[in-house]
Length: 359
Image (tube, rainbow, N blue to C red; front, side, top):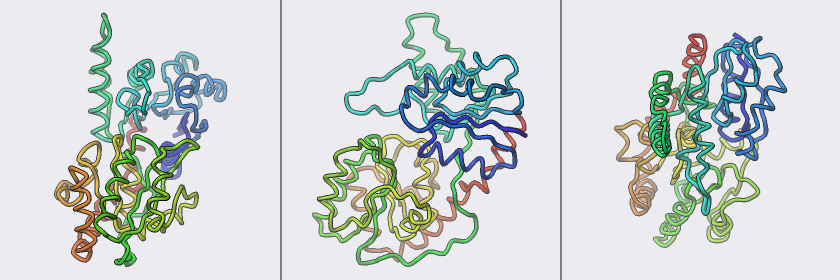
């Protein structure tokens, strides 16, 4: 089939997903994108850009869009010869955590609702995200003063599937490098933004230092021109521990750091799947994750007591335990890595291709 993939916010996990789908799908995928900036303007104006660029949508068998597009505008402007449309939700604007002093723009939340309603099929990147979306959309509709379209929620549910995003790694047996035992490497490989809760992370590391526990630190992940001040403070506070500071363009170099990592930590307040965690675990990092968001869903339940923490003190204790008894955690490392294999593009692409064929 000929598939048109429209991505208004081509960066981060959105870019990774779009390129992964194009590279692994058995279908002919045409990718049309806009740069990952001015996200609110993308939601309002991307449809006009795509209509002007594409001209004739009828030559495609399926349109694949994501949540940063106002699909209703696209359908209204593109004309009658539109093929079926799949709308994929990476995140939504009704439950995404707000930055300090930021107010919720409910117009954008309604854009998510009407786009899902207008699509022929809807995919969410985790069951957690689907439940979160439905709950937030239901609450938003209840805030309407009258003529509340509660029926819309049921229609969206009926055409929704949960399909995890693919990750760029191979299936099969993994061979792990021996990790540094004297200064075990802690990995942070998330966006440098408020919703990833970096303050909590560095507070936990401060407690480790106060207990005279040796460690080294790799601060990876994407960062924009403006990022939380805590990272600049951490650069001074942990100058003896930091081995790498900032985003690494080279995929091979990035993976080389994951292969050195003993632990990967998340403290996120927003995470609908967790590609960075899945990648790190696949390459041998033991994860320590908060008991919320998508993490309990993507980590095997029988390992939750080992990898899910409840409090800052619990996180510090778990880090200390792994460092002291590292050899005892090697079987856990291998089992978790094997469990992540299910999220490789090679394993998951058939779900997308089959769903698009059915559509």
